[in-house]
Image 1: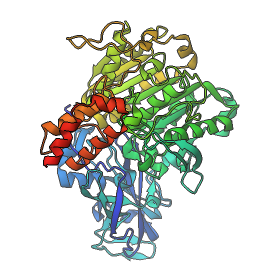
Image 2: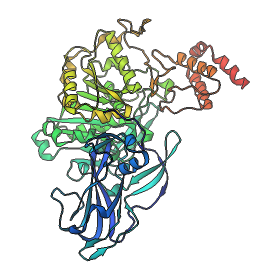
Image 3: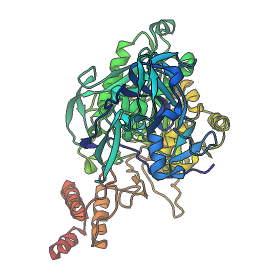
Image 4: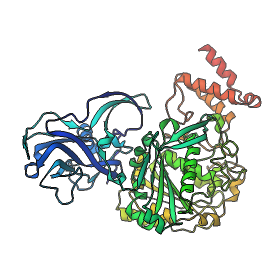
Length: 632
């Protein structure tokens, strides 16, 4: 089955600039509409629309042909067409995605397994969910929109409710500002009209919002600014039932899951609904064999955990503080040899960064569509550099190596890490290929395998288990790289969370396996470079190496392998002199926004001013730039 690429309304957390329409306008006997659903691979998915009336409806009166419905999938197919919206059609019936499949009456606002009741205030319209969208990063308020129009009369215990031409809906339309400056119409359901039982009462999940139980983080250092911040960190946490905790006292695992930047928000529901990871960790199947407390911090856009300049925000220290608080609260229950980290994209980057701050803190890590690397000159590109001295929270002494903490490749070389990437993701694949190259120069091979995300799940799981079946006691042998040979960056967690082997592997790991495994000591050697064929010179380490930084288009042309503040400044100036009419494309902001020429020139001046007097003398083309600009 071929994979279709298309950019749908994959809404990221952006700035609201307006409102229109009123949700749940009264339609005679209809009181309101609620959405009922679950978390699928793309995010939250509608499975039923609950139509509430102000009086009891007779079940014998309701038929599917008496209602017209609206939902996210139907709207997308109408706008873009089947081929651009549906990636996988599981039942092979084209065009029935999101369409009504069943209707009945119930006496409570929920679907029924036995066909409902003879009469009740709620008409339940179930819809087809047997498909996977091309989209991902779906905001749950968007994917859970619902509207209903009653087109024919229905009978109630008090008479008849006539049809109406107005749609009753649980959503509003809003105009959003995208990060690239574009405006986009969005549809957002009222959160009070969304029912997701996986996070409901008695699910084990607790939601901590700003002003309502969020974690009070104190004195958190940011590499973006070099300053400290006090703020509230929203989060969601899953805790097994008390009986389970007591029965497994001292053997409860702890998992920290971090979501991608598309889930950035102040609403903790955004992170736990954006992918299937949180649901999988807390599922009955997983909890039955591996009772686990699951923490999912919610990151605001202005505090995004990491950027592509290998720096992290104040959220880094706040997450550690939250973890430490949970460890203290459940001290008698958690097995500290079984603490795990998972995440995708920005979230996976955060976990990889944290793995080097407290060495061997995580017994195992699964990162999906994520990467990390070395940057010994963070202050040159950012506002600060996190160290054990300025951030004793993140570097709390656990496995602290003051000599090598910035050499990320060395610090993780004894860790248990499973990497999942898609072939069409130059950032993740490029940076993990660098890890492969550096380790091979030390005689260490990282096991790799690739397969299609569309072959049967059982076959994918078997390939994954075979890949992970390798010796893990030797230096560097805890890292494994699985790649989907189709798919873009944001497809990675859709494909990575449809298989079970990563979670099976994760919960079988213990900290002891890392402690038994030596690090690759040769990585503490200086960087020696590559030969004419591009191979890393044998014996080369990664000490003092600034890694190539990547953009979604591939390797950066200025901040490439071995860059220094001097060489980067020289290349930035050359780029201006060579491209007189436009700003060069480079990863200077870590956000991949195209800079104007004026912004780029200002950034070059700022970079030059950050250099020492000795370094400035080495930038021999700076005077040429001044002359060039004076003529403009």
